[in-house]
Image (cartoon, rainbow, N blue to C red; front, side, top):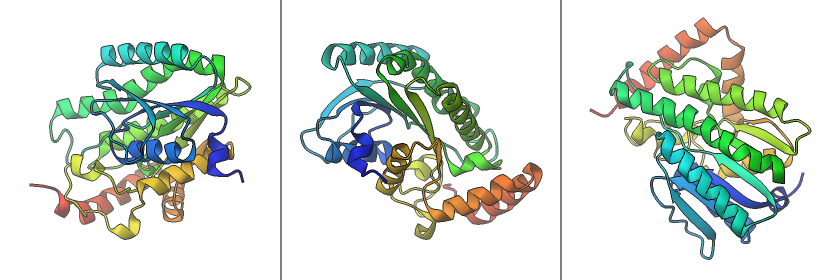
Length: 272
């Protein structure tokens, strides 16, 4: 198995979304430590503040729920990379996404529709804009899905469905890209120690630490999967086991079991 540094050695630039916090920030920090010469381009509302000195990082302000913003940022990134980095493979990491918890359409329909825009449309749009550049130079696409992708998720119905789209779309895209010099990898983390649950409307600590992973470990396992040429990775053995069981069960049964589990363990944790 190649080292993490070797996994990144083919790339000269990393283009990612949501690098200001959580898994996205960990991608910048870990990749920057392993390959200080990498050039990073981040698309998000907030500018990243990585805890690693000397990174080559440019921030492109972008609201991924806004199609016009994505188009403008993608054009600016392509121009920037063409001018500053005329050669080298590119790693695209579609990391941005958010969820919500409660009875649909709580907290409101606008929130649900914005989730569709960020988790699905923004990801597809940015990938479509960047793919010609990746085809010309070679590279890889990493799309962050979730273990929620393997079964229906009552009380998080829209979020789980968006991640199912990301998983299936990535696997299909990877097959389309065979022999092109570009490949795609779907990453399906389970509960991770980020601000995700807080933004979804849950109290801090609503998921036990026993079931959570650190963002850095998710990134490490992602890079190992990338080096191994895989198209899917579920970080953590507990997550692998649970997602395998959920994926194998009939969908109506999986939905019912998920409803019972999510209602029992999380409704009491919802913020009021």
